Length: 417
Image 1 (spheres, one colour):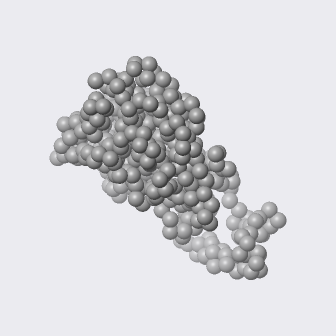
Image 2 (cartoon, one colour):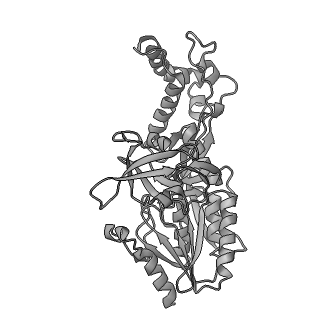
Image 3 (spheres, one colour):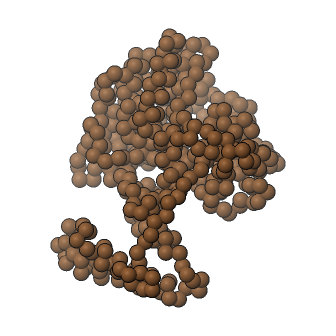
């Protein structure tokens, strides 16, 4: 069943690419003070607006006008009394939207500004961009490398997962918002960025000069491993290109007649729900992939699509604390159906459904939680996660030594079969 609107299972903190983002700013009309010809409340309550049933029953426009009176009072105070004039009305508008979304007290309902939306769209569509080629986490004390892309300038320079960007071109990044740091790293191809890196287990900072390049991102990586084991890694559940690339990768791997296949979903923060169903259907021939449960009791059922080409091969799925959302849908479906073994550590636990709506005047988008996901056995994913069948942790010593005991265990399980 196809959803009636785009549903995106995204854990943005683990899936922003370092890239060149474009921003198109629109114009926001405010209350009638100097410079504005139309009262925005008039626009809000005009014939184009749709009020909630609650407001319609309790007086509608009049109640809404009273409700927003303190907001417009504060708006006028800022414009009349704030010391630094003129104020940035676009920034105030975006801040107001952020505050409204924060008022829901739901960590997955939020406002996404045009720059963040452009970055996300680039990753989902696998577009070409200019930068160093790395997935990053901007939410910590420093911008942190999740994973360099294979063949990227970041990988060639020697950046590793867990590296923290503590300075850029000699300027200290302590206390600087991670998103602002990310924007400092991006740039035109052929230019050089100097990164000072703090690496776990290394006492002194490391210095890297990285020449930015033009990179076409791909969410799919695959290869044959020792022991005739096939390996495919999915970095994000993107659009149709991702599912097409994944299908082609499986075709190429299966042509080698492998003993088994490893699906690596580690540090995959999610993506599109349709993509999750398509990917899971490559391995599961029939039955439920995921349930979508709404607060009013309504439930949508997403079943496996016919035509999967890897429904018989022995399968192991790798997950970790960075596997979220769509990754957990796929891992949960494979686990509940007994299709394969799950190896690694417990996943993130992001099992809620967000509806994304683009805002007018190219002012970004809002996402609002509308439902939650259940595995085929009706297990809740949200704030629980998927527990692996075989728990294998990776220590700091393993990382420093270049070892991957989770991957080693997956190979061992497949060869034992």
